[in-house]
Length: 74
Image 1 (cartoon, rainbow, N blue to C red):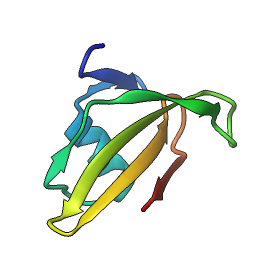
Image 2: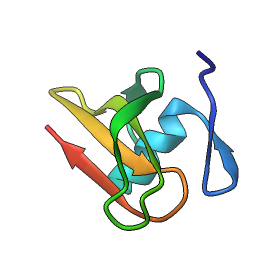
Image 3: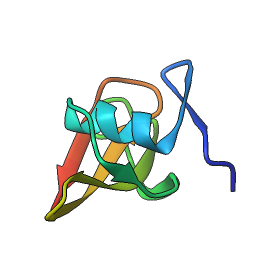
């Protein structure tokens, strides 16, 4: 599967997608995958990305491809 995906009309890398979810820079990110859920705001497709916002934390972030909705879980 390709590393880059289109989110809100822009091509993003895994690290950039993680930064969109986190709202800040991240240390590292895993490849982007499709989440098994729809966006609660617009019903669009949701992507997931695992990333490290710090040395001691791993987070899974979710971002809608069509709107501003995002969510993170630790």
